[in-house]
Amino acid sequence: MVVRERNPGPAQATEEKTRDKILTAAGEVFADQGFEGATIRAITERAGVNIAAVNYHFRDKAELYTRVVLDACSARAAWRDAIADAPASPEDRLRSLIYHFLKLLLDPARPAWKRRLMVREMANPTEALDQLVEQNIRPLRDEYLLPTLNELTGGYCTRRQLGRISASVMSQCHYYLQCQPILERLITDYKMDDAEIVEIAEHISQFSLEAIAGLTRRARQS
Image 1 (cartoon, one colour):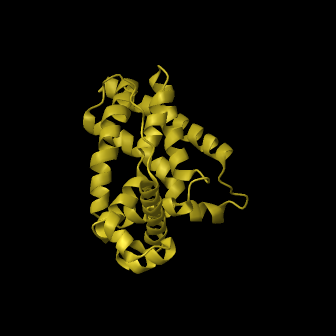
Image 2 (spheres, helix red, strand yellow):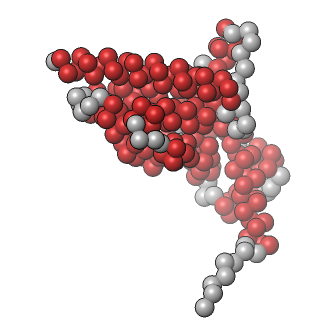
């Protein structure tokens, strides 16, 4: 017997469209005003829906905010792409990770509100960040980044040391997101595009690999 996949009916499609409109509008409002400053009224006005629609899809403002943060700030897609592209050598795996992570953070094709919301949530963390870390960031770091760094260091570094190396690599990527307003003022011809992301990724990769090699030499000698 052939089982045919059911296409969503008109009512379901309308509900999904409404939910997407609410999430997008909420993301824009939260990015501009933060969780405390944002109101459901402002979100419904921007989305063009009534309050009942928000209550139907989300229990309260906190649940809506958490869903927006998890959707906008998740690095899962970037890590998945990095893993899919990952070659055999740990050096190239690290390069792949750095490039795809930077693409997530800096891609000008992504809605700007997602970058603003990410910066705001890191500066003023809420319970949504707890969920983001536990469901997304921690498992991906532990299952992909730390094993790659362990391979690069030949197993000579402790997990604590690997954690610090991980933080150093990721912080270089975050710098270009959080300090973009400064860079735009320091560099007169500053422009973020695909070519710039590739160049930054290669710089961070080479800088990190050379630092890791130096740390590994010292670890072997100790």
